[in-house]
Every structure is written in C-alpha cells, then in structure tokens.
Image (cartoon, rainbow, N blue to C red):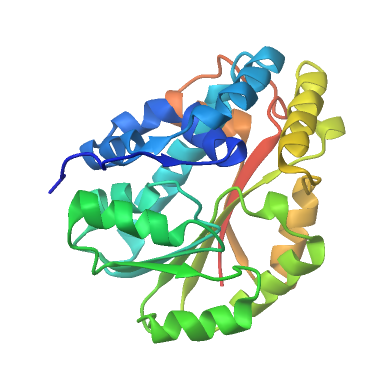
Amino acid sequence: MISEPLKSKFKISPTASLVLCLASELYRDGKTCQAYVENIDTSEGESLVKSFKQVFEHSESIAILRKRYIRLLFEDYAKQFPKFQVCILGAGLDPLSLYLLEQYSDQIETIFEVDMESMDEKRAMYTKLIGDTAKLKLITHDATDIDPLLAELKKMGYHSSIPTIFLLEGFVYYISRDKFSTLLEKLAAADGQKAVILDYVIPFEAVHESNREKSRLMLRSLEKGLGWPIMVYHTFDITGLIQFFKGNIITSDSTQAMEKTLYGENKIYIQPTSGFMEIISFKF
C-alpha cells in the first residue's frame, strides 16, 4: 500500500540523477514506482541531462529503450522460471524491484539489491511506500567482490536451488576489464541455474557515422560527470568472454534491434550500429 510522501526528499548526485531523469516517462507505468521517484530530489542532475540533450536530442530514448528491453527480458525469463530470485548488482536508486514485485510477486522468492551507496536510504523509502519489504533484501557491498558477496547473499536467504536472474544494468561501464572477467568467472562457477542480463557501451568509433560524433560527446560528458573513464567493449569482446566461461548466449541486441522489437519500426536508430548501447542475456 502506498503511503504519503516522505517529509523531505532524498537529494542525490548529478550522475545518480541522470538515468532517473532521462527515463522519468517510464516510472509513470506503476503507481508505486511513480511515488518512489516523487520522493527523490533529482535537481542536481538537471545540468547533466541538459548537456546530454544538447548533444543528442533523443537522449531519453536510450535510457527508456534500455529499461523497457530489460523488462521484456524479465518477462521472457519469468515464463521459463515458475519461481525465481533476482540479484541486481550496482542497483543504485532505480526502483526496478518495485516494478518486478508488481508484475511477478507470486513467482519471485527474493530480490537482492547490491550497491556500495544509498541502500539504507532506499530501504527506508521502500518501507515507507510499501510497508512489507520481506522479499526485498538491500545489501551494502562491493558488487565486484564476488566471493564474499555470494557468502553474504546466502546469509540473506539466497538459495542456489532456485533459478536466479542477475541484472548488471549500467554496471559494466564502471568496472575494470579484469573485475568484469572475474565476476563472470565466479558467477559461472557458482552453484545453481543462473541467467544474466547486462548492457554495455560499444566504442564510439564502432557507432555508425550518423551518430558517431554525438556518441563520442555524450560519453565524454558522462565521463566528465563521473570523474573516470567509461569502459567500452566490441560485441565480440563480450560474446567471446561469455563463451570462454561456457555461458549460453540467449539474446544479443543492438539499440536498433531493441527499438524494432519494442515499437515495431525504427524511427531513431536506422542503422545496425546507430546506437552505442547493446544488451546481452545468457545462462550459466
């Protein structure tokens, strides 16, 4: 049950505000998600959002496509798993868990959210808005330090006998190649049936010439806001790494393919490499 708004909004950093602002349209899909976002002060991110829009007028489309497509992949996996767990690495402040509980409450055993920051504040907002948070476990932990994280997950109720969907949304951008490789290696070796969904950025030189310079400027703007470089991968880098660890690739889609699947046509991303973001899902 949705309660009244918090007495004061939770103010967040410009980079944390960015995706919430760009994908604001999406959070009107559910009353709980909308109420959650209304309790967050994203004003610090307005200048960064403005700089993105100045470079690429369709900036919102990238964030919305990513999130809608991830929801579609969850729908597909929910058809395969009568019961499942979700583990969101680098969860940040995105309220995806609220949407998943609205859609798949009877199927979801537990959702584990993992991040180094804001988990206490997020837990407080969840409790205020929905009351019963028994299915939501928020863990303050380095999501790249996978061995102790898996041990902590088990303490919090993670069961390897239940299929688990691991989501790495906007996560691979910010970790080193070595840490990413180790993370996949450890997930592959862990017990149980696991599906993984992740998105990644391709090098701007691989983007179609119609959007190449815009992509370069957007990535540079994001790097400036973060204070460190964004990690980029060619599609073959990602698929090769997954296959090296014996992963079974289920879907692999460009921005163009996602737009076509979701909307039935391509209005913004006309060429196969028009966008700089791709999403892949696979099983271990």
